[in-house]
Amino acid sequence: MGVHHQDLRARREKLIDLLIEYGKEKRHGIVLVFDGWKEGGGAESSSVRGGVTVIYSRIGEKADSVIKRIISSDRREWIVVTSDRDIAGHAWATGSIPIPSGTFAPFIEEGKEKDETGIPWEQNGDEVEDGREVRRYGQGNALRLSKKERAIRRVLGKLR
Image 1 (cartoon, rainbow, N blue to C red):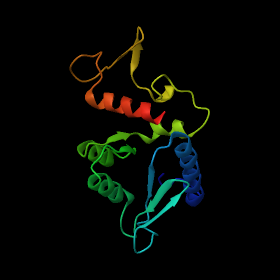
Image 2 (cartoon, one colour; image 1 turned 90 degrees about the vertical axis):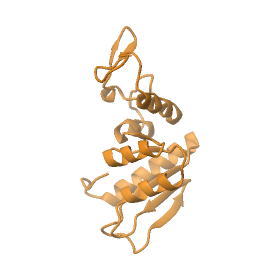
Image 3 (cartoon, rainbow, N blue to C red; image 1 turned 60 degrees about the vertical axis):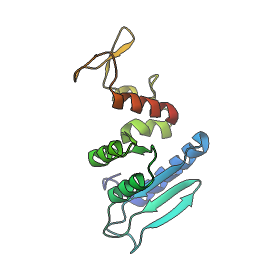
């Protein structure tokens, strides 16, 4: 979320409410981690609201550390919504799939137009020729998505 919001507490509450509604509709388990490193308590705090587990890191610890600890200790395929490169890299390394926050946001917000993959039009960076996606970077078959891209597409289907 960053610190760009005037009322961070209200913004957090709005996000929690959106995730509660999304979780009820999709029946996904959701864990939301917030920074408490500047104004948190002496210990990490955790609560469940409407089926969403909300964790605040302890004072002196960033949410990034908590997220890494969670996905490292519970070795399963987590879908990690983050725009942080370090967390995304750690997710890939532990067998989880990171999804950029901007790609996930339309799933919990109403009224955004998406393509057939669930990715909002303005965020889909691939070009389409004759109905097929074509990657314009890397090596290999330009018509075949990379292993990571296929994994992302697979979990986006679950999130829809």
